[in-house]
Length: 180
Ligand SMILES: NC(=O)c1ccc[n+]([C@@H]2O[C@H](COP(=O)([O-])OP(=O)(O)OC[C@H]3O[C@@H](n4cnc5c(N)ncnc54)[C@H](OP(=O)(O)O)[C@@H]3O)[C@@H](O)[C@H]2O)c1
View 1 (cartoon, rainbow, N blue to C red):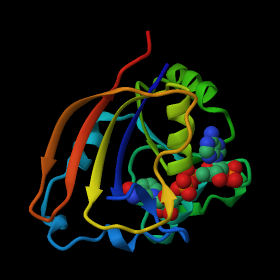
View 2: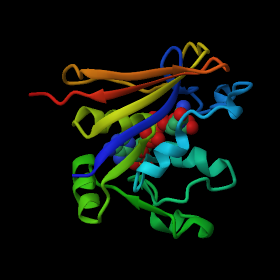
View 3: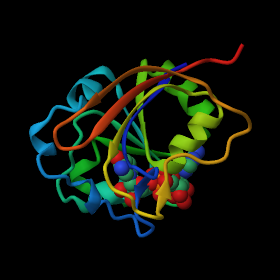
């Protein structure tokens, strides 16, 4: 099965976006001069899986930022909704996470970057995430869209490394410990 990998920024209180989806708080002075490992992460995956919420936010950027294939999980959008300029890079699927990872393995994907809060939660809850890099932004939002949510049981992780940056960003890498 294809393995899932997370690379995401959160506020110090664990949110990935404000309630209205805005991510203005991700911009921290000086952070653009630092290497937080994004390019290395992108080079290590065969493509991205993201939720419709994340896809719609990325579309707002105007310029599509990904070269690798992007699979958008959605039950509400149809292929005809994909803008012409990204039709060769984006596809929509409505599969459940395990079915998707099995299909992707058949299609030759070894590693997938999994993005979007609700999608990450659903992949985590069924054991499809192998590791995660969480970059904490020094801001408290007091509310918003959380990265983590309810689980059937604890998920234990090994802390691999933590790096802090002059901008105040703190990036930690964890590996998920598979249950016995
Ligand atoms: N801080 C960061 O680094 C970072 C990174 C990524 C995203 N974000 C932000 O996070 C927000 C989006 O996250 P989100 O949690 O609201 O949404 P999301 O996880 O990106 O998307 C959720 C949507 O995906 C679809 N979906 C299909 N299968 C699913 C499944 N198995 N599990 C969950 N969803 C599934 C559903 O859309 P349908 O209703 O169409 O079926 C669902 O409403 C955006 O504001 C984005 O900017 C921040």
